Image (cartoon, rainbow, N blue to C red; front, side, top):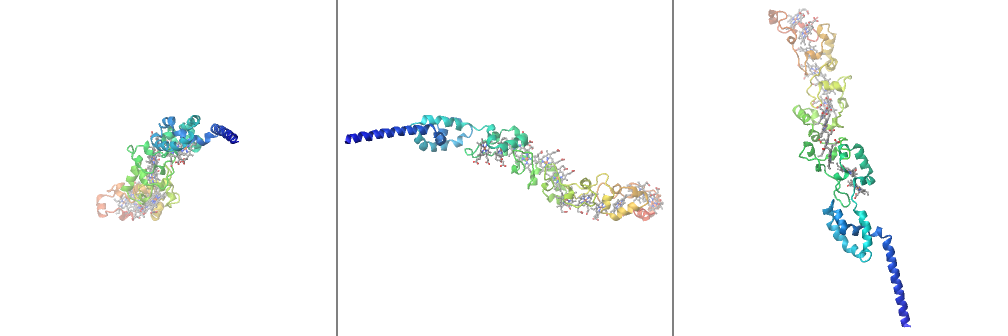
Length: 324
Ligand code: HEC
Ligand code: HEC
Ligand code: HEC
Ligand code: HEC
Ligand code: HEC
Ligand code: HEC
Ligand code: HEC
Ligand code: HEC
Ligand code: HEC
Ligand code: HEC
Ligand code: HEC
Ligand code: HEC
């Protein structure tokens, strides 16, 4: 009786073991991929060699050491050989530039359409690493734009003006004028040499977009309604507006808007001066005056008469309204 029980039990155990092995075999062949894939395959024998080229040094040491002891121990005994092969193939493939589009379509689109000279650079020439393995996926500009090469490459915070995927499209925000002066030193020198209220403004208050500028009338009321932006510039320089120098062809009403009485006197005079432009006698800059003998012979009426009446205006009254 005891022997019979023993045999039955033994038979039962054998059957159990058999089923156990069969069950294990099934698990190993089908769903195993998903479960066991990662740690073992990646950091074991061959992969190591392949992974090294790029993120190598940093990444390898720790994970390899950590992973092997536990998970390796569990899996290795029986089906090891089978499992290692598959995931190895699929984990090791390095990222190529054509892969980026699968997950970052907008970055690729931006560069292709608006990248400028950065189009000639592959994604992975700038992005040397990729998370989670790579801790430093964002490049610095100075990797390629050597600060020793130009004053401009020494500015901090390149991203305040450039977005690297479309580096030439710039919308200036609140930025320091020093950045502009690194390429346009002359305007800074002009502001320093001829101080004015404009020197206290940030460049970008007038230049919101590169190579463009605001109109004077955006901030000021013109002296005369009909004055255009170009007219303002005929008298004022934008970076040193205090010194007024006249360009050619300024009409009399652009002076008369401030000098109303003189304008009226000249216009209503019946003498030859009323045909003249203000800037013929007030040449080149504000407040300048050309005296009578700049145009007329100082001895016109004979030396003895001029000795007695040295001032022309003693008799001719006023340059703008000559005595009738
Ligand atoms: C399989 C999808 C996938 C592919 C292919 C892929 N990436 Fe990524 N990338 C991601 C994910 C997901 C993240 C976010 C990871 C995180 O935040 O930890 C990411 C993050 C990044 C980052 C970091 C962003 C940040 O704000 O720090 C950069 C840069 C990057 N990828 C560039 C690339 C480049 C270049 C390529 C092609 C060489 C590429 N990626 C290919 C999925 C992908
Ligand atoms: C000239 C170097 C350079 C090139 C080329 C470049 N990137 Fe970038 N990329 C950067 C920098 C720098 C940042 C960080 C920008 C920031 O944070 O303002 C960045 C950011 C990213 C980000 C993070 C999210 C975002 O849009 O800010 C992703 C994703 C990315 N790049 C993918 C790509 C892909 C894909 C390519 C190729 C089509 C590519 N990059 C080409 C320099 C570059
Ligand atoms: C991997 C190298 C690399 C990196 C990193 C890089 N650049 Fe460039 N960049 C270039 C090259 C190459 C050019 C082409 C012009 C040249 O030869 O200088 C260029 C051109 C440019 C231009 C002119 C683009 C045009 O179309 O005229 C700007 C602006 C620029 N880079 C800004 C940046 C900024 C800002 C960063 C940092 C976010 C940066 N770059 C990072 C390589 C790089
Ligand atoms: C204040 C805004 C501003 C900042 C900050 C700035 N840039 Fe620029 N950058 C410009 C402007 C404006 C241009 C001229 C673009 C043009 O010619 O149309 C330019 C042009 C460039 C160019 C192409 C012409 C050249 O001189 O090679 C490169 C490269 C460049 N910048 C790199 C950088 C780098 C690198 C940084 C950070 C160290 C930086 N920029 C910071 C505004 C800026
Ligand atoms: C990297 C060098 C660089 C930087 C930085 C830069 N510029 Fe320029 N800028 C240029 C170049 C190059 C031109 C074209 C010059 C030309 O056509 O003679 C230009 C042209 C201009 C013009 C138009 C000139 C004209 O006669 O049409 C203005 C205005 C201007 N920049 C203002 C600025 C301001 C404001 C900043 C700062 C926000 C700035 N720039 C930053 C290089 C730069
Ligand atoms: C972004 C606004 C802005 C623009 C655009 C602007 N200005 Fe001004 N300007 C000012 C401010 C602010 C002051 C100082 C306060 C005041 O006098 O209104 C000033 C002062 C002046 C002064 C007196 C300077 C002094 O030191 O006493 C003159 C002249 C002047 N502007 C002329 C011009 C001309 C000409 C233009 C066009 C080329 C112009 N401004 C464009 C903001 C601006
Ligand atoms: C008050 C407004 C204003 C301010 C502030 C200003 N600009 Fe200008 N800038 C102008 C105007 C307007 C022009 C166009 C002049 C013309 O058409 O002759 C101009 C022209 C320029 C030019 C083209 C060459 C020239 O001198 O005509 C450059 C470069 C320039 N500005 C750079 C700068 C820089 C750099 C700063 C800051 C240091 C600055 N600007 C501040 C209004 C301004
Ligand atoms: C015919 C020359 C001339 C023209 C054109 C001209 N200005 Fe003036 N502007 C002057 C003179 C001269 C002064 C100095 C007045 C003084 O000394 O008080 C002046 C002063 C100013 C001032 C200092 C504040 C004030 O009103 O006294 C501003 C601002 C100004 N001009 C803006 C402009 C603007 C904006 C335009 C174009 C719409 C313009 N100017 C066109 C000659 C001119
Ligand atoms: C924005 C107003 C304004 C405009 C425009 C203007 N002026 Fe004046 N001008 C003045 C003011 C204000 C004074 C008085 C300054 C003082 O006495 O300190 C003055 C003074 C003068 C003087 C007197 C110099 C002296 O020694 O007493 C002359 C001459 C003159 N302007 C000529 C002109 C001419 C010519 C124009 C046109 C090309 C012109 N002004 C445009 C405001 C203006
Ligand atoms: C034929 C030459 C001539 C013409 C044209 C002329 N001026 Fe004068 N202007 C003078 C002379 C000379 C003086 C100095 C008078 C003195 O020393 O008492 C003067 C003085 C002035 C003064 C300061 C004294 C005052 O009378 O207020 C102003 C302002 C002035 N001119 C504005 C103008 C304006 C504006 C125009 C054009 C509408 C104009 N002038 C056209 C010759 C001229
Ligand atoms: C920029 C040159 C210029 C200046 C300065 C100038 N004039 Fe004249 N003047 C003329 C011209 C041109 C005429 C008309 C042709 C001629 O008679 O020579 C004229 C004409 C005259 C006439 C004759 C007027 C007529 O209708 O018969 C008198 C008088 C005269 N000027 C006096 C003066 C006096 C006085 C001054 C100084 C306050 C003066 N001029 C300054 C250019 C000038
Ligand atoms: C003593 C008074 C007096 C003085 C001083 C005087 N003039 Fe006259 N001037 C006259 C008279 C009178 C006429 C002739 C009447 C007329 O044409 O208005 C005349 C005529 C002129 C004429 C126009 C006649 C012509 O020959 O074309 C000019 C120009 C002239 N004067 C310029 C001057 C100048 C310049 C001065 C100063 C250097 C001056 N005058 C000083 C009284 C004077």
